[in-house]
Image 1 (cartoon, rainbow, N blue to C red):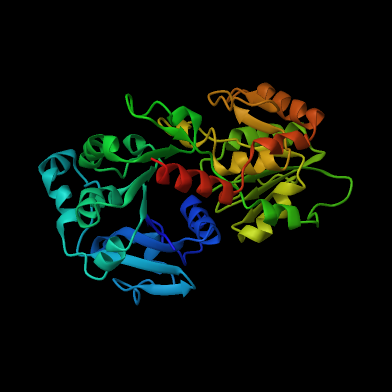
Image 2: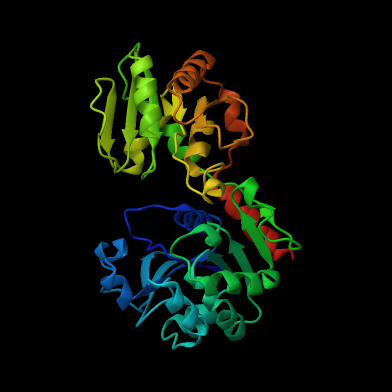
Amino acid sequence: MKTVSFITGHYYPSKRRAGFHNLADAALRLGYHVNFITVGYSLLSYLRNDYRIHSAGIRQNHNRVVSLRENFDSYVHFTPWHPMTLLLPPLNRLSMRWMDRYGQGNLGNLLLLVKKTDVFVFESGPGLFLFRRFQQENPAARMVYRVSDDIRTLGSTHPRLIEWEREIVPDFDYISVPSAVMLDMFPGVSVALDRHGLDTQAYDACTRSPYEAGTRNAIFVGTGYMDNDFLRAAATAHPQCMFHIIGPITDALHLGNVRFLGELPFTATLPYIKFADVGLGIRMFRKGFISTLTDSLKIIQYRYCGLPIVSPDFLDLHREGVFYYHPGDPLSCAAAMEHALQHGRHSEYADEVHSWDEVARTILESVSHR
């Protein structure tokens, strides 16, 4: 049995699910032994009140291999410090070479997992500083870079990490990006487009609608940066449509046809998406973050369910069934919503979506054949 180790900032038992959780689950189903290795976690995480410190069991599981189920282990690489951007630019400049030392420290119990790994899959983040060390300890292993984010646009990225990524990218065996706009991030290097997958079986098994019969419903799912101006304009112009907002977003509108449902478990969110009439991709503009939005997991979910999508015109989703509005223009917002409602659902949109098993298989088989 081959072993794949995922190097990520996520903690597997966390309530927050990310693409790396799904890739790890898929690798297990494909017959791999999986190590889910949490990095970028240290004493500084407690000083900065990192959300992960509140995850159940994380303190007890520092620097030890924890078997979560057969052939699936979790490891939290806890260190005195970890690479992160500092408060002042001069401090970042002074600490440039210090960042490299993250990969030179004592690996402890992690070393055994490293030596037994056949394929490493690195996420965008501080774990990249471990790349050379893992190569040194296990030169036969294959190296994958699953580019979850463009680190050049993240405010939490130390400038040395940007340099380091550029230095090591040519030495990866396989580079995978989830969005078409990320294909040109690394000139001169071969990059593969592997869009986010979906738990298609969970959607297929969902059969009960949460909506009242005969109603029209639009859904937004996200953690923030929702365009409230669009929501106000569209909800006011279309009082017959209910707008449902899932995520840690506060109701600042107080409109009768807008429901803020708060954060819901994954399974509780599914029916709101599957049985909606319109998927809302109504994000506010954030410089440098377009690459994470054009093929986001939410867009993939909307497509699998055949929903027309409403999107701001600074995003080009390169798909049929997307209706654009100009931010700040109420008439444009109302018109985009009207066109989406008239367009209706189209089941063929699901054809572009792959399961997480298919995505994981593509990545792991591709790197094995190189």
